[in-house]
Image (cartoon, rainbow, N blue to C red; front, side, top):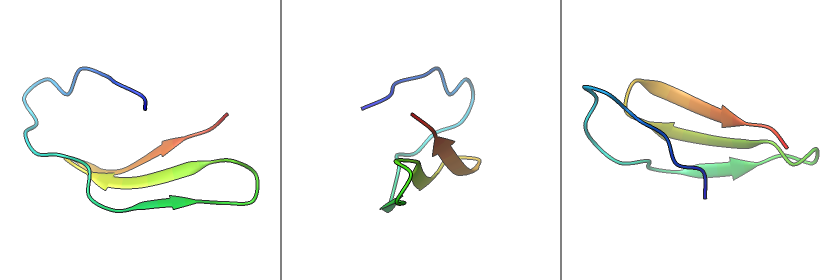
Length: 37
């Protein structure tokens, strides 16, 4: 699982989607996070 500094944002990721190319989409503090491989 990727980790990073969220600075002033609080909360936790909620919901996760993986596409056919291996990209991960997660809703979390500040909007939608996208990780590519």
